[in-house]
Image (cartoon, rainbow, N blue to C red; front, side, top):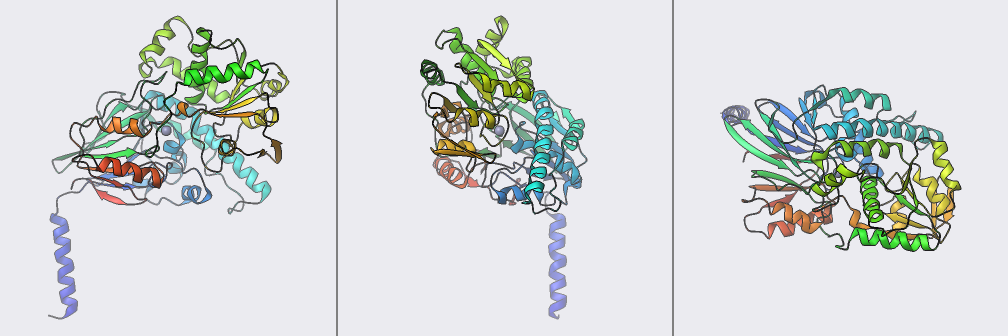
Length: 485
Ligand SMILES: [Zn+2]
């Protein structure tokens, strides 16, 4: 037998083995592996393909470039299911449709409503960025193009199909999904995915983003259920949040700034941070722990989103719902909701103590930049940072103690007090993540750590693997794993 015949015989043998091999459900990490953004997990079983989350890569240029990589297999994906509305979990959807995805998008009602606001806004910002890049000539695309437009983001909203917040939902004979409250933002869920292939059932638990226990507005994360395979987020896998009271800290800072006749500027994300700050201010005002002063919510998107929080009591803590019966728990003193840019500019004329809450939360854009330019050069004022400030953002620069703030072609001296309010994070800290995984009565056969910078994921891997019966590895970008082994 010559070697060519030998080779073709062995290839035929491999093909035969493959043909007779039992079916193999598999999962590919297409994002949020080695980083905190771009969440996308492709699950394949019985020739069908399901994507869990469809997030945008955010952060440095190298990461953002991944959003432009073609996705030739998009047309072959049958369904998309979402854990929650944050753009790092949903912001790629309009592009996914442009790449050929034709299936439905499954989410619960609050996530669909939030996406209805967040995705068109993201399209608008993409267009703004491309216009800016075109003008300044720094884009690698000639002409500079948006990843997608506001109109394209609007169109993708027709693909959303609401599914149950609590019950099993059968997507196909291969895939069924059940949601568990993740307590991170309105509508956030951990997903329990049951995969049936060749008569064999495999359960994969996707943690989604885990929120805080005992937070003021949302329910605490629900304990996880039994699973064969777990994907667990690790955003704060290497650290804890301070356990001081956000109420005490907010009361202190408001009182001392008002005493010196200053103004407080709070860069805040439209979803969740703004509502949380409003609620904390409301509680402090009710308890007369802060002086009476005007509060400006200067973000049209935050105003829209606030109404969603009020119409979904099932998402909220008992305490918040009790208050909802007697009062508007997101109202405080004299609240001014400013929708137009003229109303926004008029806030510049306010010289008396007040609080200005405005997006974006990391001072990367939006109306808050104008307020920072106005208020940073005065030592009477304060800027409150209320969440994760990514590297390279204006918020991180302020957190790092810069002496002058460079923005929109201007440079202003930073004389205002900068206060870092870490208690306001929407993500579980290390101990809270450990508390969540302790909910498993039996450790999953395999755990993959996702949605974390390498240091955070590695630190959490050590802690998980120190637990009896646990086997965790850090997921790698574009790695494919066998789910049925
Ligand atoms: Zn999130």
